[in-house]
Length: 90
Figure 1: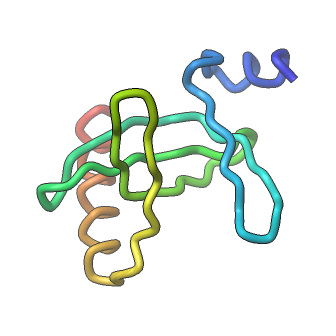
Figure 2 (figure 1 turned 60 degrees about the horizontal axis):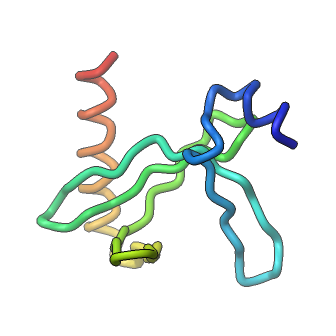
């Protein structure tokens, strides 16, 4: 699998595996952690796609937690913030 990861331009440390409620897993490259609405969020790119997943993000001393964004308005604002950051970097 390491060969596939290199093809997508991510280092081993920049890949995490999402585990969904139905038991499926998806490897994602970490696009970045960013702040919006006084909280931290993480943007993930499922390997081999152009999709972007955005989750709330909490980091602890030796672990982290991904949080679903269930509020529609919060999600829209966070996506807009992420898109603005990407536009500046392009």
